[in-house]
Length: 337
Length: 248
Image 1: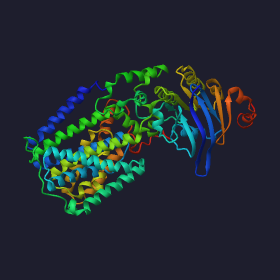
Image 2: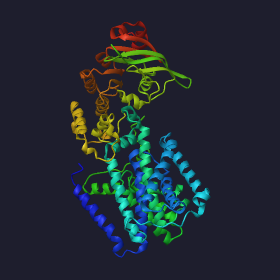
Image 3: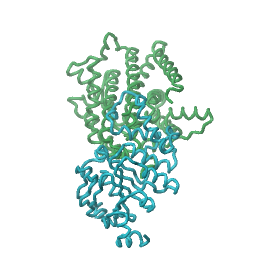
C-alpha cells in the first residue's frame, strides 16, 4: 500500500525541496526569505504538537511553553553563562523542552479530554507569568537580547539565507523523525491510545506512560524549534511562550490537517504570511484572519491536506465526506459508551 | 486443580449505592464459568473490578495466586488477563489488522520501538491475518474497523482477546445483539478453543450459557446467591424463583 505510487511522492518532495532550496538564490526579497524561515520554525513546533493532537489524542494548549522554554534557555545560557555555541544551544533546547514537558505531564496527565486542555492552558499561563515577572532571570517584558546566531561548524548562518538553510535542514530532520515515529510500532500504540484508551489498558498498555513519552518527545522537539526561533529573532520575550502562541499553533495544526505532519508546513505558511501580509494592508487584519480561519474550519475541518485528498478523490469520481472537527480533536467517535 | 481467580469478600459501592456485597467465588484453572443474574445485578461491575478498571471498596482479588487488588488494569493484562466489552470497544479509525497487531504486540518489548517502521514486523502482520482467517474475515484486513458490521466487530473483539493467549479470558455478553446465526458462530469459536484457557462468561442467552460453560455463579442485587454445576443451579429453588422464573 505504501510502495504503490510512492515514487510520485518522492518526485513531489524532490521538486518541493528544490524550490525551497532555490528560493533565497532566485532573487526572492530578503523580507520573504525571512518570513519563510519563520514558517519553517513554526512548522517544526506545529508538527511536534501534531504528534500530541493527531497521533496521541492530547489537545495541548501548552506547546508554546516548551517552545519558549527552549528559546529562553538558550538565550540565558548565551548571555549569562557564555555557552553560545551551536551544538550546546540545540542540546539545551532539547533538554529544556523535555524538562518542562516532564513537569507539565505529571500534572496535566492526571486528567483526560477537556480537563487536560484546561490544565495545559493554566500551565502555559504559569510559564508566561514566570517569563513576565521573574525579571532578574528573564528580563521581564524587555526580554533578553545580546546574543547572536552561532556558527554551525564551518558555516556562517548569521545572514538571512544561511539561517534559512539551517532551518530547512532542521525542518526536514524533524519531519523524517516524526514520520518514522508514527510509522513504528510505538506510533501504532500512540494511535491506539488516541482511539480507545480504555481498550489499550485492557490489552496491557500503560496508557499514562505512552502519553507521557509522547509529551516528552513533543516537548523536546518544540524546545529545539524554540532555540532556532531565539536565534532567528536574536531576542526572546514573553510573547514567545504566551497562550496566544499556543492557540496559534493549534490553529496551524487544524489548518494543515490534524495528523498530517507535513500539512503543518502549509498551515504555518498560511498563518505567517497572512498575518504579515494582512497587517501591512489594514489595522483590522486580525478580524479578516479570524474570518479566514473560520471558513477553513467550516469547510475543510480536515485541513488543507484533507481538502487536497478530497479534491483528488472527487476528480477520480469518488465521493468523500469531511470528518467532523470535534471527532478529530476529542476522539468523539460514537463508539465509546 | 489450581485456582485461577479468587474473589474474597469483594465489596463495591458507588457513593451510597451498594453494587457488590461480599462477593466470594473461585474459578479453577481451565474452568469455563458463567455469571448470570438479572439486569443490574452487578455483573459488568464485577468484570470491571476483576480486570482492574474500577477500584474495589473492600476485599481482595487474586489472579493466578497473586493478590492483584491494587494492580492497575494494564498490569493485570500483562499477567495474562484478557477481556471483551459489552459494547464493542475497538479502535474505530485503525484498520482491522492494526487492531489485531495492537493486541499481538502488547506483551512485546518492541512496543516501545519508535524508529524502525512496522513493515519490519512481517511475522506479526502474518499472525494477525492468520487469526482473521480463522473466522473468514481476512478480506477485511485493511478496512477501517468503523466500516465493519456489528457482528464482525464482535468477532474482532473476541479475536483480539484470544490473540493475547490469555490465561484468563473475561467475556462480557459476547453474543449480545447478534442474530442467531452469528451468535452460534461466536459460541462455536469459544467451544472450539482447546488451549485450556480459563473463561468467565457473562451472558443473558441461556442457550449460550448452557452450551459453553461448566459451572455457574448467580448474582442478584450484588450478592452471590448460588454457585455450582449446571445441574445444581437448575435444581436450586432460590435461583428458579428469582431469576429463571421457575421455567427450567
